[in-house]
Length: 53
Image (cartoon, rainbow, N blue to C red; front, side, top):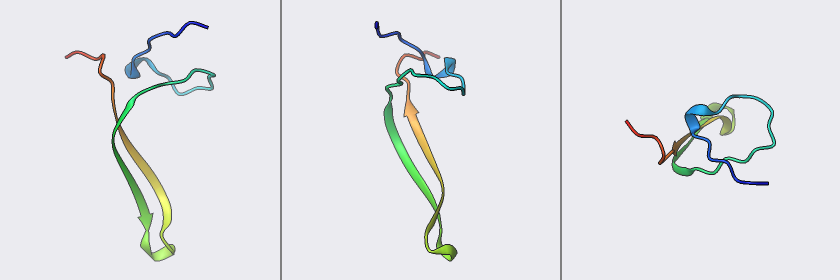
């Protein structure tokens, strides 16, 4: 199978067997202190070096 370049802006939320490779710039976890540090969410900031503005 050949590798196909796909930009982050072209991705869609659906089931797929494709793999995405990106560089992770920042990673944040939101935890609820009142409920034993229960994980509420995760935010990630990715770099897509192919996008030009």
